[in-house]
Length: 404
View: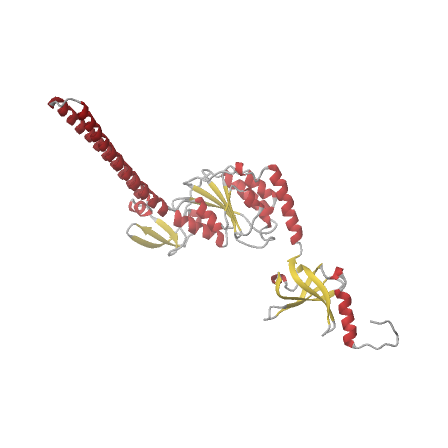
């Protein structure tokens, strides 16, 4: 563009010059801009038009379809937007063309996460050698989570379906907000004071990095590390990894998965027992057959080497009968023991427990299993399942037995 006071330029020429000037500036082609989103409009094409502003200025911006983080473009949100500055000649606007959006402060949180992770790793809190295994058949499980919401119900449903004889103790705590981190740490300490707790489940549903931040706090990490019983951490979704996950004895991808890891499946146990019984029976039968064959071969060799006398032959036959009788008694004894084991396993089945006079209580028809008097309030409708049917009832009063 020539520098002459007598030259006259068209609007397109001036607009083109402005665009070329901005596009040629490397500082404006790769930059992050922090501000508040305003006037956000998302169209069916997938493009989002909005403004970024602070207390003194505002700039027009656009994110075309395919940009990352458009879900954060809501009026009033503070964001960090990456892109380039250019000139839209049709409307005469200087615009920020955005290709990536992150919530403001996310970078600081990530930096804090990495700093704490490095510190605790150096202290050995993540060391695999200190992580403990889970008991095969827990009798009492403590669950540290919010008393409301779907997480505790999901855990109770999974445990009730897989291993209903286990006792579940809820240790309530907030799991989001400023009170969450100290609340979780205090709840973990309280769970460790309960009698006969075999394992602790620490659980929360999914959310953003900010929502899950309580589980990235040092006070929570040290409370998990100090636990006298194993801790299974089921926080967020499978892709969410927190400091609590790294310190825990076992990490589960979801709260429901944590419940599955903690208790065995009764149906699988029964199937395994039947299979082991079958294998043992076949093994004993093979041993008896092999022993009989060995005796027959030994007798044949003995006959070939000994003079054929009636007394010796009778003695051998007597020994053979005695050995065969002994093996038969051994085989029957083992068979009786196997039947006893099978009967014991069958007696543990929920239906056999009900036949002995016990009952399964749920809150309402097909509701969650009631494992504590504290879970029932006067007036609640109950479904009482027995061995030959069920009874609908209503709780007239609730009497709780104190326990340490």
